[in-house]
Image (tube, rainbow, N blue to C red):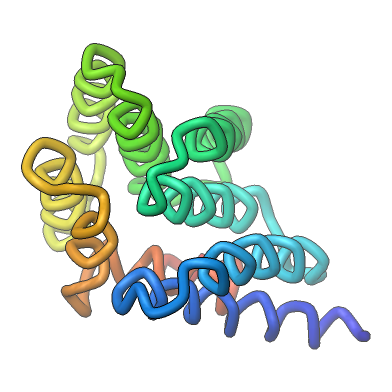
Length: 181
């Protein structure tokens, strides 16, 4: 398999995970697709730290949707570490969403204090998000932490077709512009 094929598989699988989080038609396929996307995108020559962070974010989200706290926490932590280690490679919404992933994983684990702490970190770092729609999507994602069950968390993140939720959907296609990875 060539590197360009890896990239395209990573992109296609990333988008398939979003679809499966929305429909919940096949949780096992969703989980395997999230890991496969991260692997193939990681093998692509264009892969940068931001792509790896967003893959970790998506894997964490899948585990949170499935109610599996330990792997959700593990991948959220990896996302946060990548954002903190490579701030120059991230968009202004990557770090707030890394904190959102940590909050979501802590919520699934039943640690409401740490979930609240990470929600506040997400809100504070979210002030740096320049695009209004991206800030709005962060606020919506954070609101689901206090009002929705894990099954509806995925749906709320994929409902809208603009802004940061779309930015997260776009993380796989390219590595350089703000409309992608």
